[in-house]
Length: 231
Image (tube, rainbow, N blue to C red; front, top):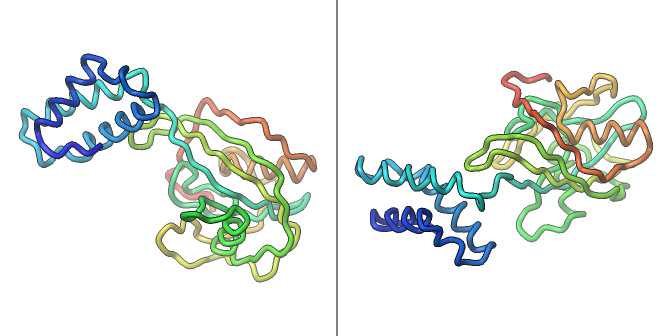
């Protein structure tokens, strides 16, 4: 939903104020809430001061609505490349894991198959090309993270155990639109801790140390986005 004139904002506020949203299906309701709140936050410069105040009031109402989703959701595929001594990690920039060690992998391109995405992501972020791998399972990680209109993040991840690779580990990789890796490193497991690693890295460490993949969700009460890189 993209309000295009001042009248639209008045309608948005009136709908929210009188709980009109209860009359629409839950899925449609969420699209309306997310779309309008995002628009209200990012399109204020073109409004008069009076209408701007009204828009902010409407956005505030929407943000506090019981039906407003609190969790941003991310989905991706990730590869565990390592052994009982060390793990291949990427030097992450961007998102909640910025400046930390992260696991090679990422989101799918439009219509992309899972098995194609994992090969592509690992090669783009590490320089290595998997030759033998198998899927371990899926899990999710939940933690506080303020992003646009959301207050929490739920990162859904499918893990793969990469048994063999071709190529050479790249400490620096090409930068392009969508790239969020500065390159890759092989880091000893005992150096990978919560203070410097993403939840995915810690899950991979657990797999390498125990030989078992636990699909139970991981929940953090606090999450710190680092301002300085650990790598």
